[in-house]
Length: 289
Length: 241
Image 1 (cartoon, rainbow over the protein chains, first blue to last red):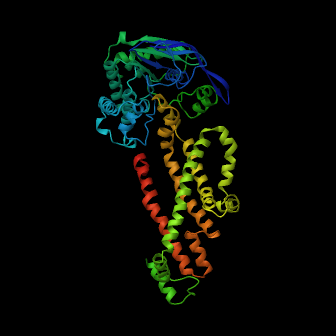
Image 2 (cartoon, rainbow over the protein chains, first blue to last red; image 1 turned 120 degrees about the horizontal axis):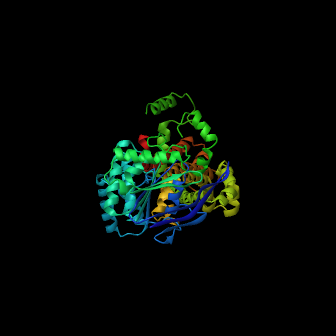
């Protein structure tokens, strides 16, 4: 169980002073839920994930995992980033074993688990390969195995498929749902792609920016059973409804399904600047913000 | 090879006086006699010992200092300018002070060697460590890495390609400093052989020692740095970029 209680997080930016990424944010994620956090750039969804991961500290309020306040990152919460962040000086198997070595898992157990999770992500043939020899999708598979190898109850994923080509993305989407169903992990998945959120999550939380707050909280599992597909009519329809709901309430940033900004920068400084100069610059460049 | 033959031919034709620029065969003879009488092997042994000790000290100190500079703002603010400034100073300039501090001893020459190579390793380590992608550190922290192991298992390996280029540079600087030091104050080693050759007007001997130095440089490059570099390129995949 993840509890976010009235959390506030501010960032100091050199140009605009202090900006609040999150203010009085509260939400609860139950065990075994697959929650997708979706929202426009700058809505604080990545900040929220980092707070749960313990990579950042809240300025106000508290994040609790299984009732204990989060004091820092820990192997009970596996994290995946948009960039796989595999270590290029280690082989695929050594990357998967990295955390287990850190936690002094015995060698035999380490090897067994490395094999098990590489099998699970369908990368068993690549154990001895160097990272640079893998494609983007393969790297994310290994990153998933690396996160799973520590056997965390919670998996935190920050747009992990955002930079992948549509085919690898679709494949990884089905696999993460399958792994979730099989292992009963709690997953918090950040994305800016509404269709992806609806396709994956048992629950979709739509966030709105400035100030960041929960706009909608939808129990998708009750409406659409898995397996789903991004092109499935019901998925497209629900995604469109949620998008419409967000626009209706006075939000004009698109929460886009197929935008070109797969690498949207979630740092609050950039987000804050998005209202002013960066917005104008983006307009000038013909970008779709 | 053709160049060496042309050089030999030109020397035999008497285009210049042999004691100014000796022929390859004269150098070869001098090299051989130096090897046979043991002066060149002894010189190599002495110089290499100093080089290796001084270089290892620089390596440990340079990586440590570079790491410190990259991670500590206080250290950077207090030592950063000094490091950059001293880097521009040829290490042989330290010799008078080193002689004063350590006397005519091994320590003095080691000091000059360390002064020559330490900072290039420091600077390369600092830049390597500062350029480690923060995401690596974040990822490692989510897997429970903290403190010293974070440095040993993530930050230093990630900075290795940069550190390696500093190590290469440091090695050549260590050689230069050592030769300058040995030339200037006599205490065995290849530099001293050069100095005696000069005093005796024996240019064949001087060039024989130069050949020995070049050979040593090539051997360490091929046996050590090339291998290390090739390994890093293979692992990181930088040879295909």
